[in-house]
Amino acid sequence: MITTQRFTFGPLPSRRLGRSLGIDVIPKKVCCYDCIYCEVGPTTRCTIARKEYCHSADVLAELRSVLESEREIDWITFSGSGEPTLNAKLGEMIHAVKQMSDIPVAVITNGALLFLDSIRQDLLEADAVLPSLNAVTPAIFEAISRPHTSLTVETVISGLRFFRREYSGQIWLEILFVQGINDGEDEVARMKGVLDELQPDKIHLNTVVRPPVESSACPVSLERMEQIRKVLGDRCEIIGDFKDIRKHREELPDPAAILALLRRRSMTVEELAVSIRSSTVRTKQLLEELRTEGKITAGKFRGIVHYGFSPRE
Ligand code: SF4
Image (tube, rainbow, N blue to C red; front, side, top):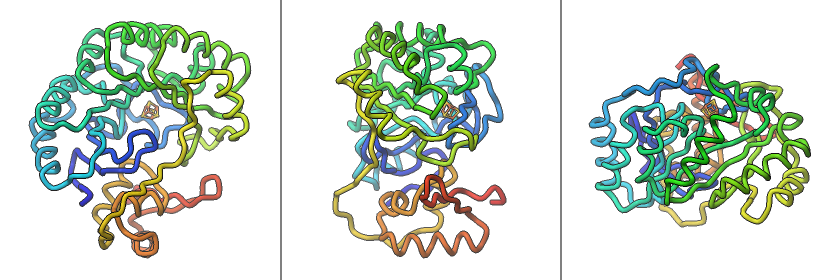
């Protein structure tokens, strides 16, 4: 059964992590970037200050209770409504989760603060860390990530360099391409030089697939993504749509579960149906009811309807 709790969400179909149970330890929307393609929403607090944004004991108690009833989880993933490394208790929470369960732990991060010793230390026990690096040229980095004023791309790359040396787990680096911003030949060639030095275990190439904060952030064509993949080399893969082929007992769609998922990010009817293990038809019916009640919104992005949480809720 999908969780509708305060800190945990899912398990959600993740294009990189299979069925991923999310843990959200940052309020919406606290981040050190304000990316033009962000699917969570505009950054309302741009900071590099780490804080205990929630009580880790509450997070862990909730996770423990979810794990008692939910069996089909491929990864437990710190991610969600902002940048998880800004939570000062992240290391303690990762350690506690590793004691609690054998399920591998991942952290999805923008990687901006890896130059801080405390953050690199906190991540050491995670099984996989999924940082992003969308540009290597200062002007392009600033155009796409709109970072906190204290951050430069050189600092970010140096943090990734330190982390690669110290961390023995998996580093799966994501590069998200936005048309006309970071997909040019020169930038891709410079990225190749940096990636050769950083040696991530995997490189995931992505583009804008959900409604972005800025409507000017347009996706890159599959053809261009293939060209980029060839330049960047064998470790690269273009991450495709998630297909969950496991058979599940079909459940009646639960409005609270749908609202809990949409509070974190917009999703298509198919993604929601997989997440809540219901049929597409029943999920669609419920979505239309919620939309009529004004609880959720619907809008097309790249010709596909995405449902989102209504600001009125
Ligand atoms: S995409 Fe990630 S790093 Fe960028 S603003 Fe959104 S939450 Fe922050």
